[in-house]
Image 1 (tube, rainbow, N blue to C red):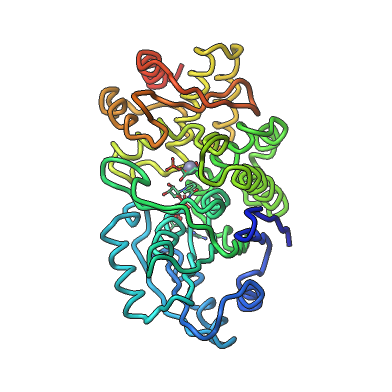
Image 2: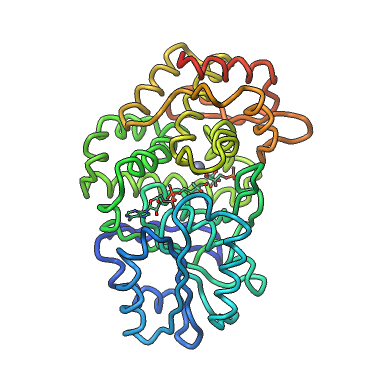
Length: 364
Ligand SMILES: NC(=O)c1ccc[n+]([C@@H]2O[C@H](COP(=O)([O-])OP(=O)(O)OC[C@H]3O[C@@H](n4cnc5c(N)ncnc54)[C@H](O)[C@@H]3O)[C@@H](O)[C@H]2O)c1
Ligand SMILES: O=C(O)C(=O)C[C@@H](O)[C@H](O)[C@H](O)COP(=O)(O)O
Ligand SMILES: [Zn+2]
C-alpha cells in the first residue's frame, strides 16, 4: 500500500492507495475514528453501485456498522441542487446524526456531491472519499466540494476535508476507456504545473497507463496525489499557489457549462483548456514549442486538444467571466512558462484570450 498525508494540522488526513482496500474498509474506519454508534451513509452512482456497493455494505455491516445507501444517476448532471436535496432527504430519513459520516463511493461527481452534503448536513459532518476513477486522484484530495449552477461549474460549494481517502485501485479496472483518458488528463496536469520529469513520464508511459497496468498506474496516482497534497497543504483555501491546480480550467469549465454538462467529460474539457493555456503561454512570452509539446503529451493519452466548432467564442468568453478566479474586472489565468512550471497571471487582456480561443478552434 502507498500512503501519503495531506498536512493540515489537526485536520491532516491520509491518502491510502492500494489493492484490496475496500475489503479492509472497517479497520481503516475504526483507525480513523468513524463510530459504530451512528449510521453511515454511502453515496454512489448507478454505474458504480452494481459493481462495488453490495460488497462494501456487507463488509461494513459484518463489522458492526449501520449503513444506509443512496444511488444517484451517473454523470455530471448529478452535481445539481435537485440531487443535493434528494441526498439531504436520504440523510434525514436514514437518521444520520452529528457523529455519522458520509462515504463517497465513486468518481469526482460523487465525491464533490457527497462532500457538499457532508459539509452542510447539520452544518457539517465527517466524510470519507472512496475514489473509483483515475480522475478522482485529484478530486478526492483537497476538500473542494460543490454542485454546479446551470451558468457555471462548482458555483455552490465549500471547503470540507475528508477524514481519509481510501483508494482501492482494483476498482479502476472496470473504467471505460474514455474515462481512463479523462482521468489521465488531470494526472498530466500535475506534471505540467510542478514536475517536468513527471509530465514526460506520463507521456512515456501513456500506453501502460491507458492499459491500466497496476504498477504504472499506482506510481502515477501516487505522484499525482503527492503533488496535489503538497499544494493543498501549503494553501488550503486557494489564497495563492493552489490556483495553479486550475491549469486549463478557465476554458475547460466554460466548455463544460455552455455545452450543458455532459457532452464533454471534465478531463476532456480540461485537456482542451490546457492546450489553450499553452497557446496563451506562448503569447505571453514562453518559448515556441510549448504548445506543440503540450498537445503531443495530451494526444499520447488520447485526449482532445481542439475546440469544437459549435462552441461559439462569445458564449465561451461570457462563461469564462464566471470563473472563480475572475476578480475586480480582471481575467486570471494559469499560464505555463514551460513544461513543469506555471504561474498565475492576474490581468490577461480579453483580446488576447479571444485570439487564443480562435486559434484553439483551428487546432493551431
Ligand atoms: N473537488 C476537486 O478538487 C475536483 C478535482 C477534479 C475534478 N473534480 C470534479 O470531478 C468530476 C469528474 O470526475 P470523474 O471524471 O471521476 O467523473 P464521474 O464521477 O462522473 O465518473 C466518470 C464515469 O465513470 C463511472 N465510474 C466511476 N467509477 C467507475 C468504475 N470503477 N468502473 C466503471 N465505471 C465507473 C461513473 O459512473 C461515470 O459514468 C467533475 O465534476 C469535476 O468538476 C473535482
Ligand atoms: O483542487 C483544486 O484547487 C483544483 O483546482 C482542482 C481542479 O482539478 C478541480 O476541477 C476543481 O474542482 C476546480 O475548482 P474550482 O475552484 O475552479 O471550481
Ligand atoms: Zn479539474
